Amino acid sequence: MSAAAGIEDLLRELAPRVLGTLVRRHGQFDACEDAVQEALLAAALQWAKEGIPDTPRAWLMTVASRRLVDEWRTESARRRREATDAALELPTQAQPTPAGQDDTLTLLFLCCHPSLSLPSQLALTLRAVGGLTTAEIANAFLVPEATMAQRISRAKQSIKSSGLRFNFPPEPERADRLRVVLHVLYLVFNEGYTTSSGPRLQRADLTTEAIRLARILYQLMPDQGEVAGLLALMLLTDARRAARMTATGSLVPLADQQRELWSSAQIAEGVALITRTLGKVPIGPYQLQAAIAAVHDEAPSGDATDWPQILALYEVLERVSPGPVVTLNRAVALAMVNGPRAGLALLGTLDTDERMAHTHRLEAVRAHLLERAGDAVAARAAYQRAARMTASAPEQRYLALRAARLA
Image 1 (cartoon, rainbow, N blue to C red):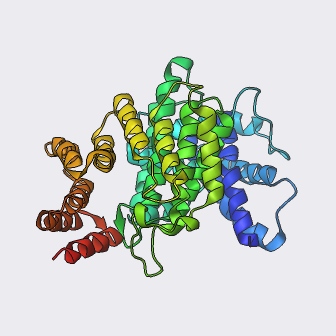
Image 2: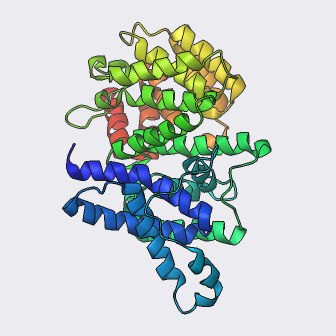
């Protein structure tokens, strides 16, 4: 690892801890977040030249705190902030977090507060907890940097105007708030694993960041089965990343991937996580998805995959967390067990579901099952429809090629 990469990793690890400490002490998420961003920039420049200080977290705390003092000592804010400024001491070492309290976890809950829109939750999580720059987040979601900057600014203003406090959610709210946090991390990972639009199939920076944040969450909440389930799901899915595309950039479906390219270390870690979790805590959708991913990853080949077990897991998942995407995946498993016509019949139940109207995946799966059923004409038409519906260039190429082969 290069020195620059090591500094970047350290800054991303320290950023939420420093920000959490500042917000806990002083409130004002927006001002504290701006101060931390300036401290991170200063650190990236200075540490690259002079080396990492002995106490990097204390260094960041000092620089960010000075930034706050400078802001609060402006003429317009002097009178309102005199008491705060007098009390504020620049720490030479970071103060410890109170017993039983973790600022990173509280910060995650704040960034994923239900009062914020989903785009705001995603952007704030990646910026405040993930340590990504506004430009990096904008690039990930294919929007102009100015647009993402406005989105982040509005999100911080929403926190300020709504009076949200930097407090760990009370017990009655905790389960619902945790579901929001997990959902945001899940969306970040999915956008990285299969980008929704643009020239690239995947964004390793986003999947890596989602896994890093999920690890932090698991370290903080190891007894939460769905936290372990989400981390396991990410690891077991990301393990296949190197085999998903050819050297020329063509998409490779799961059944055709070279399994020797899969990460055995990630598979082993993911399987161990889900093995320790299943049956010991209440079952949830992330645990079930991880179990399905584990069955795929442990199969020596596509033909040797235990499809009856996968189908049984999808049936449980549909009872626990029903939805059109689950039904779509269950249709694939059903086709592998009972034949493509059985899968197509189940797919037909989704034709009137408006939630599937803006995704290409229903037509892509239909095309695959029609091809397996021997209906080349209908399969070709479905592949073409799917290709027109997706904004992902690699998926467009793959679907168009499948259609052309059936001409």
